[in-house]
Amino acid sequence: MSELFVLTERPSVYLASKSPRRQELLRQLGVEFDELLLREAPGRRRDIVEAPRDGEPPLEYVKRIARLKASLGWHRMGRRGLAPKPVLAADTEVVLDGAALGKPADAAASVAMLAALSGRTHEVITAVAIRWQTQIAQAVSTSHVTFRAIAHDEIERYVATGEPFDKAGGYAIQGKAAAFIQHLEGSYSGVMGLPLFEMAEILARIGFPVL
Image 1 (cartoon, rainbow, N blue to C red):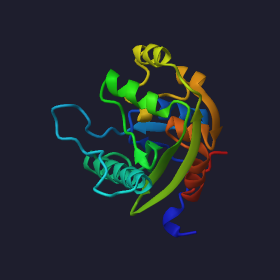
Image 2 (image 1 turned 60 degrees about the vertical axis):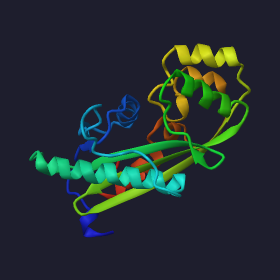
Image 3 (image 1 turned 30 degrees about the vertical axis):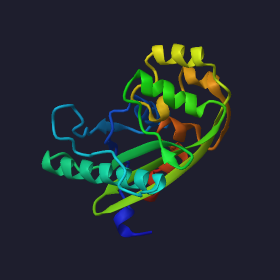
């Protein structure tokens, strides 16, 4: 094990995400954290433009964004003069027919996404990255989710709940969309947005075992 990845005490981490789902998952494992938010507000220059490069495969895109979030969070920590702690970041994409769906821009986009997913199997790729000193440790979780056939009126009622917005693929596995999921092969927490198995392995590598 590299000496760089050895900590002498159990630290808390900075979470470079405002996602309440990721916060919930960290609490599930008893991982202490402080939020370290990146700029995402409309009308201001965003820290990260979350858009794939031309020809960039979804897997490489998700890995790149997670690394970038962790690295930018680390530099922001330094600029603010905060106590050094590992910076945790993640990124999730729903992939159908080899293309990342992203997050729906509005209700119409949500309906279109869910209609495309209806009765089919798609991938959910989540990359988690932790920046500590000069190194970034990373892992990826890929899950396969099968939706039952969903009637159009069901999709419209679901979109009307507001749950699809700000969610990759336009749905939340931990919410009402659970009624659509016929089969899951992979990581439930990964589909939520933070694969706990992979995250715990990385934390152990930097001297922060969860258990």
